[in-house]
Length: 305
Length: 315
Image (cartoon, rainbow over all chains, first blue to last red; front, side, top):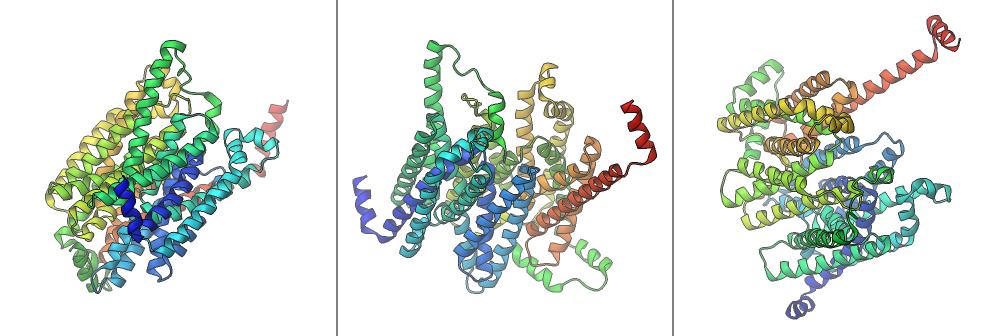
């Protein structure tokens, strides 16, 4: 580990990767916790595919990749917010829309590849790197932008965390206490869109869902207290990012995205082993503490898309 | 390689006579195979997709579709059959999702979706690893993700048809109890329907379907064929048999027209499949909205008979 730390300081591309990676992991860990709490993982899935289409649309039309990335994600997040407000939006509507957006992404990939493939097909490489991430290829200025954007997301999320968790767990009571439930849910979707945009550059459009879901799922299993879980989720995400990048550096054939998600998935898996063992020990004393398998009406607000 | 064949064919372009164009297209053996395979895939995707939409399992369906990619990438790397790879990926993922214990804390919905999301992302990361180990042509990677229909062999068509028959036969057995368990879970459980077994069996069926459809549309666009014809059919009718028939008809129309257009275009077939499917869905939604509006306006201007009936009820 110490030799790895030495190499990190020696190579500028690793400094960029670790700096940007840490900031992105904090943002996705924090946002991911609320995503899982609100039961909006499918929305995160949809946004990750929109990120791909947005980036490739920008490339196909010859503008900056990040413009398409953030523009596409935020626009789709607003669309989800509008669809959700009309209350007839379910996962079928979301699914149909993003399947079509993904088809558009395939078109842009093909347009971009044919327009730039005269000399050797750099288009295909770019397409694959948007899908699967290229954190080791971040330049210094890109890394700085990512840090600024991620920090902004994290600050905003922490600022609205208390009312947001309240509005998620009990929307009716929150509304009657004057919490702007609707505005919060729109703001949160936009935040999720920005997170998807920034995380696409680290782990890629197809894999950012893991950075949102796995640390948050682990934190949910480890503690039921919302604010402890919020920070725990960010901590697990950062730990996975560092360990994954180190593995990818030490074993060159392992892509960094695989390292990061492999560690995050392993942590999530181990929480299953840990909590089921604890439950077995607890069950001998308390006797069936795990009985409420279906907790009735308190579940329903969490499942809304 | 397949892309360049497409480009050469497309250079010929459509002529003035559409019948002649279709005849010219069907003279090519690989196009005939593409239409056959497309038909198999469309029927299967529509039937299983109809149940998926009914059960609100779009997220699971999408995940099972996407995880066929690492299976296929592993097969490419190991040099074994890509078809086998697609099936292995989807079936393993279906088993993993089925085996995950229900959450102890009572937040069944959100916990389960975190698991599904993690399975999906990890599987795709594994796919990226295999692609990096394989280190070969990027064309084949984008082919796995976005589909290519030009290289379907006779053997593959037969294999697709056999699997489709097996899956549809399984669905014929599962169909009625599954419908019952989906529409009214509590009553079905009380009547002794094995709900847990059925949902695991359905996950496996969904996995096989996703693997089958991936071979034509690519792993990322399977979802379009699963969700769109079925969602369109459910906008139009709530009756099961009619809905299934409608979904199959829409699926066939979408796939065949997409193949036909893609033949004369340099644009990818996946784009046409998802665009035609989405158009069908939007059209179905519009039909439903118009129907609802005419019904509402008919209620707002009640004829003498309706007024009489209301008066009798009041008395």
